[in-house]
Length: 290
Image (cartoon, rainbow, N blue to C red):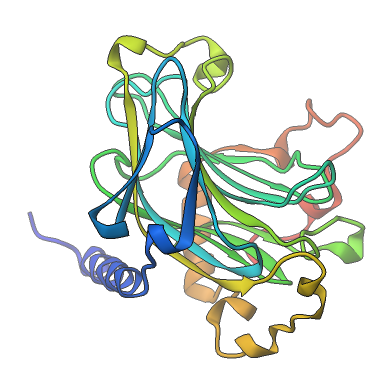
């Protein structure tokens, strides 16, 4: 079959992005700690790969050794194949405490042959309710794909294979809290949520298929590493050359975002009038493509 010029260019672009990602990849031994799962999380191949597993008794997870205030965070992930119903695989940033900040990628499993749901959310000062959900334009269980969070003082960008799927802008001028003061760690996990994850909890995990396994590789934590009070005094000036410090979408990125959201978005809190009868949040009136 003859490949269109646009398809060919996209494939070249994705290959270049993949090569850049691999070149800058970190090492799981150096960058993270496996924090729970009683041996179900494993670092392999000299720190290049990490697997998490889930069975009827427990899931597993890991977290970054450092906390960060802003940065770009990438990982390549291959999701649980086959019947993944009831499982949730995660890649997210979070601070601690009741008024925590959080930036979420969650991948909700499904029965064999049905697509994953990609769930995104942003919490600031303990408040979330900013969910957007998507399908993917590929099978995320067949190969590794790159998932990224760009977080700077102006915006948060969610990317899949370097294609933006969501932008959450800083709208503090409208009274909307934005995560910018609390350092966050990177967390990844695989856990059982069959009370809600798949079709609202109607489909439960089939434990005869366990253990379920998700695979991570090419982790890249490029950010302002700091912790506690030191974050307030550690300037971003030393990151002047970091693309993430002021990263935004150009015209090509905005077009790609429109394509993703028109074709693959399945839920948007900014359109859920029954859920918010008192009125949608103020930022819903702003363009999401900035």
